[in-house]
Image (cartoon, rainbow, N blue to C red):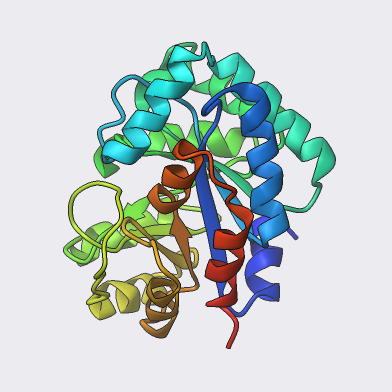
Length: 256
């Protein structure tokens, strides 16, 4: 059984943690990955720093800038990922990235490297659905799942395409706009979740704005299989704060 499938079979609710690789530097980044696991994160979603992360808000954009200023390269990121996988055989790991980084050396080259580093899935945030098929095919050719994004206003026919192309999980945006934190996140996604279930899509996981344990509980109550928090963790990294306790509180919110 694949790592993500085993995770969803095992956990009544999943908590995923996002950080930017190489932020604020490579050694600290490796230590932060260990904190995420120690805090109880079920899966990791990890960014490769890019100069124009258009799906991300100011907190994650700043993290990418810090990592780039520190000299972090895609080669460094794949090395970090491979080292993490050597230490943690069973933790699902995904990459969130952008098309320029995938296409720079060619899709086949990128997904081959991801597979060699032990990556389970890749979400290419700025590739629209009508351009996603070649990315999905290249990913699957190397045993890597393509993760696709769904939203409350995604038309049913596109949700069926997302279900057919996607793997590991379906990234469901909890709000319009970009990543960030906020006091209120509304999960008015019943139609989207029902359509994804009917189409046999990978498990729905909410992201964008997940920054408090109550948000995790609300996501699960709405019918999601899990939730991913990024900006709230990355803000703690930026402040030099430990992240394990925050992750533990977010994970605790998945337990009935």
